[in-house]
Image 1 (cartoon, rainbow, N blue to C red):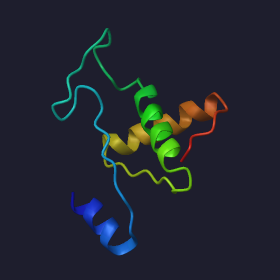
Image 2 (cartoon, rainbow, N blue to C red; image 1 turned 90 degrees about the vertical axis):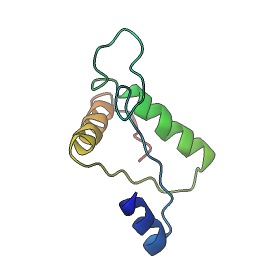
Image 3 (tube, one colour; image 1 turned 30 degrees about the vertical axis):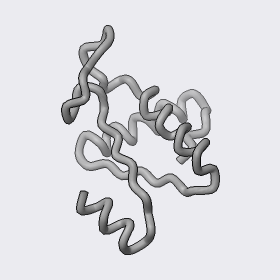
Image 4 (tube, rainbow, N blue to C red; image 1 turned 60 degrees about the horizontal axis):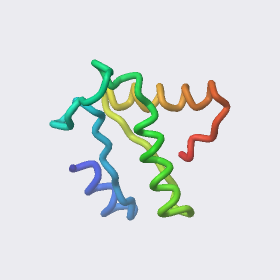
Length: 86
């Protein structure tokens, strides 16, 4: 929360928090035991933001596992030669 508040106060950045399935009280539902390899959920979030705010820059920031997941997402999109929207 501190980072998001500081980013808004200093630069006007609006924040979105993405919690993967099975983390922070978000139920893990479906056939997968782990949500780590499911980058599609994050892709839906990026596409939703891009559709709602087409001119807004999107910047990602992750700490620990969040940083690793951001790198994983970008790598998966790169392997498919797809734009990231970020």
